[in-house]
Amino acid sequence: MTRVLAAMQDAGFRWFFLARAITMIAGSMSSIALAFAVLEIDNDARSLSLVLAAFTVSNIVFLLFGGVIADRLPRALIIQSCYVIDILTIGAMAALLFTGTATVPMLALLSVLNGASTAFVLPAMQGIIPQLASPEHLQQANAMLSFVRSATTIGGPIIAGIVVASAGPAWAMVVQAIGWVIAIPVLAMVRLPPPAHGGGTTLFQDLRTGWHEFRTRTWLWVVVLAFMVMNAIHVGAWGVVGPYIAKNDPRLGITGWGWVVSAEGVGILVMTLILMWFPLNRPLRYGMIGMAAFAIPLTVLGVHPAVVLLAIAAFVAGAGAEVFSTGWNLAMMENVPGETLSRVSSYDMLGSFVAMPIGTLIYGWLITHSDVETVLVTSGILYASIALMTLAVPRVRRMGRPDGAVTT
Image (cartoon, rainbow, N blue to C red; front, top):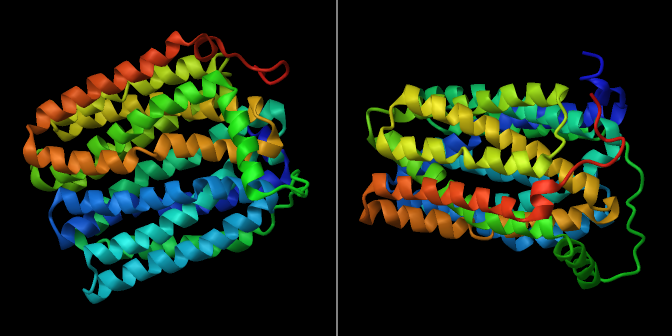
């Protein structure tokens, strides 16, 4: 157990871990709450796709700037500032829902602000972990954060399904805002060295440097290109079609959908425990194989969306996704210089997210004009094929770990 918790020896990582745990616990109900808040106003998958697309487009627009800022300024301060914006936007959503004045355009506008804030948080988060965890503890640190994320994913959607069905989605948003309020002073306890970026360059020079670091790593841009399509499928088929089926198919239902999403979290949780003990010697090879497993719940969702069967499929997909998540974080943190990591991460996120708004809009249109089963089964086949095709690239298939980074 001491070896598993070795990353907690550093005080900075302990405070960061606590702050992240608080926000992950508080925010674990947010996606379900927002989805059903929109569907409560307008039971139309196109409205839900519009709100989700608003968040993602805003996130994409600001991501590159978020990466540059995270390499220039104290990363913990950036995260705290963005949490303040999140509190205001989430609180406004809750207030509109409580007063019965919420509209789809208003929720979309607030999602734009929330998406812009997240664009600065994500690159800062990616860059801060290697500053707090030693190389030999890096996999443990990422696995521990994933453990909390998956644990909250298990309980959050179940509670959200119950709360939304009984009291409405606004209360889940209130909990999230409170969590952010608590996390801000906790994050202030993290002490980091000054940013490695020495200044003296313009914003666009920094962007060019980040782009050079990104494009010269074949393994990086190949996987990002794959995720450009895979994430569009995921957010459309799972994020739009899933809640729509849950609301309109008695075999699943809103509460049942909460159980399914939670089962995915259980799969992630189990895999994080495994990854605390066993090193990933080939992080990208096993990661992309794990991602291909998401085709299973997509197919089940289309063919027979019964709660138990779909939950089992989601469990398998969750375990596979965690193999990739930890493997990808390791690949980035061990192979990209720390002083450019946030910028390179922003290019990674930009490429991975850029087609997601298209995915939400396309799937919102598809399920009103096509057979849902055909759409989802085809999506599953396409998803798995793209994931596995990346293994044809030697740098993806063969990538290992640096000397001294793998411990047993």
